[in-house]
Length: 256
Ligand SMILES: C[S@@+](CC[C@H](N)C(=O)[O-])C[C@H]1O[C@@H](n2cnc3c(N)ncnc32)[C@H](O)[C@@H]1O
Image (cartoon, rainbow, N blue to C red; front, side):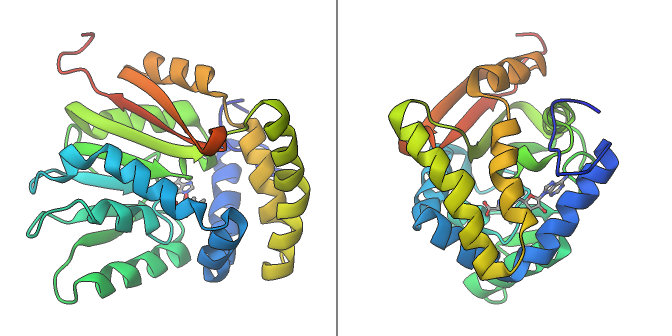
């Protein structure tokens, strides 16, 4: 099995890793938003907003084609929508866990009743039902880390982006130093207990710290992005490096 992809406990290959991730998110969907806000003390809202602000120049273009992949219950999409002008074309919000996506669709419908501001699309990030070179911006918040194959994910985003198109991947990371040690206690011991108490489930909140531990550190992730053909690859740490935003752009000319 590839060593660059999510590995929920007990899975042997990429197909079963993807199935386990999909089943896990479908099962926690009813409590996902509540837990997110409790476990992050609402800092998650700041992270989504900050990531969206980074792309406000693209978002301000009414015709820009935007994909929020692994959108889950839609909070990243909602943050992106704040920078969309009136009459902008809808954002595509895609996820393969139907129960998560359904909650997102409800939020989008409530924002401007009668006018689609975002379209919920059930789709696998590694096999997007989109034409090549069709997107101006692909964003993923806390989803990329869950893909069964990170290189395949980067290749698929590359395929759907237009030349010059932008990529944003917001995800957790493991801070270093004394703060990192303290945070590790919270993340690996306290957080799984709170998650278990609220959802009654054990594995998703064991999987979360394990998946962050398994996720490439920023220098390696940046090297993977460059190897996949992205330019201007950068990582901006958020909140002492607990999370961070990877950004990149597709070259206008291949190999430029
Ligand atoms: C931690 S949630 C993040 C949701 C949302 N973006 C947020 O910031 O709250 C990760 C999401 O990624 C989705 N996901 C994981 N692998 C996927 C894949 N291969 N294709 C589509 N969605 C995927 C899961 O179903 C889940 O909804």
